[in-house]
Image (cartoon, rainbow, N blue to C red; front, side, top):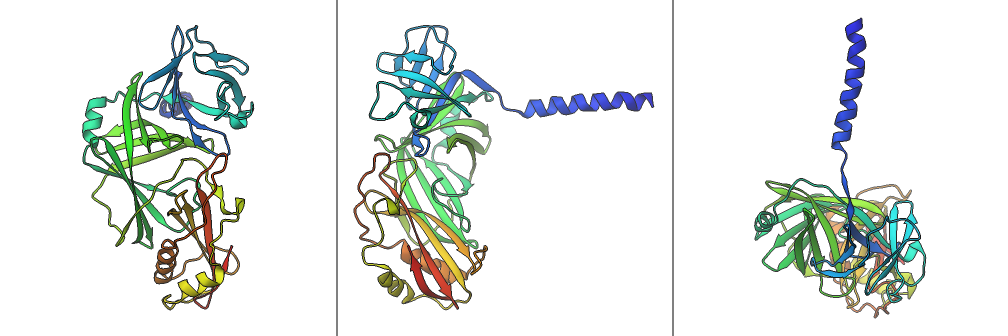
Length: 376
């Protein structure tokens, strides 16, 4: 009995030790910029490094672009970080500190946490040799399965793989969309990228060389054939793990698509951005060569329209007449997606204050396997 009594506290100590051991550790003195303007998720690709003498503001290429020149303080609500070109007011939120730049009225419109920039502590990782990691990436494809091509695109019924292929100075990103294991659509983007080390941690930035188009990730785990990227969207932490892969099986045609800015797109109803030729035209056009099918319900194709009127970042949701999840024949789904994604002549998108791209969708009503109605 005495032995059993001793085993219980030992077992409890073991559980506590192992659970604590698996928890991530974070660097209090290196903070990663994620997004600004909470509802729009506009990238804020900067690091804030605190040392004994000052705060350093570091851009997505590891350049020190500003410093406080005064002793670093705690990031408490109401404190200010005064730099040569920036003055950051610290604001609190439920998820941690946010920074509001009082000297930048172009990007920080109102003194409120909603319009500030979210920062998160960098994760403490195992030692990663920068040179070895960069050599590892060259001319090798890495793939991850993602829920959506972009966090703002609803998707339930497509499997999507995201493939990175690094060259010396460019990153090719390939999204391949599958329905019931068949590739039905593929899109590609080629962008700049930078990989750098800060305080023993590795960071990757990628995106086009223009304002509001660069994302910043922390590389958190590197294995013999994989690596993981940590980022934040909608105040939620996202980790994607990429593994060495063969070139993915692609659809018959690769479409080139890039967003005009990252972050949350506007919605089609902001400026009544519906298809100018009308729904009757779309129903006739898309029904013309539709394959025979069966079933009743709804097929919704989601997509993004960029500022050039180009379409990409696909999503799919299907429902029966009672609005419950269902699946239609692959031939019909493939036909709808290919017809929708070939549409041209969308109306010009007037740039909003916080967006340049638009999320839209077409919901097809299916009766006895045939398209009978469409909205919006």
